[in-house]
Length: 121
Ligand SMILES: [Zn+2]
Image 1 (cartoon, protein in one colour):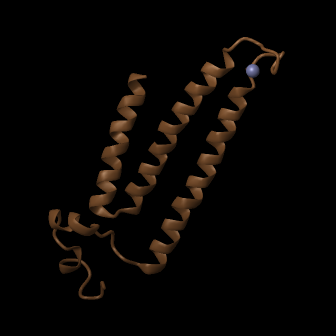
Image 2 (spheres, rainbow, N blue to C red; image 1 turned 45 degrees about the vertical axis):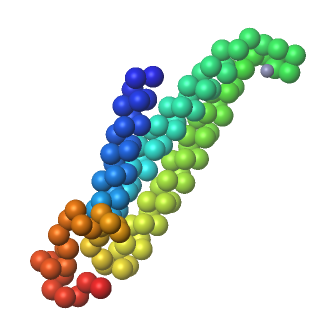
C-alpha cells in the first residue's frame, strides 16, 4: 500500500509537469503512471475478491476475478496507447513546440522568442 501512495504522489507531479510544460512526452508518461496506479488498485481489489470463499453463486470460488483484473489492465494499456498515439500524431501535424498552459505560462519564458523565429503562432 505504501508503494501505491508513492505512485499517487509521482502521478500528481507528472501531471503538474505536463500542465506546466504542455509536453506530450510528459503527458504520455503521466498516463502510463495512471495505468500503474489504477492497475495496482484493480489488482488489490481482485486479490481481495479472489480470496473470498466459494458461495452459492460461485461454487468454484472467486479466483477468476484475477482474470477480470488482467483484462481491465489490458484495456487500459490499449486505450492509453491510442490516446498517446493521438497526441503524438496531432502534435506532429501541428509542429508546435510544447507550450505552457494558461497561467502556468508565467512560470516559463515564452519558447518562441528563442527557438521559433517568429513562425510559432
Ligand atoms: Zn460469489
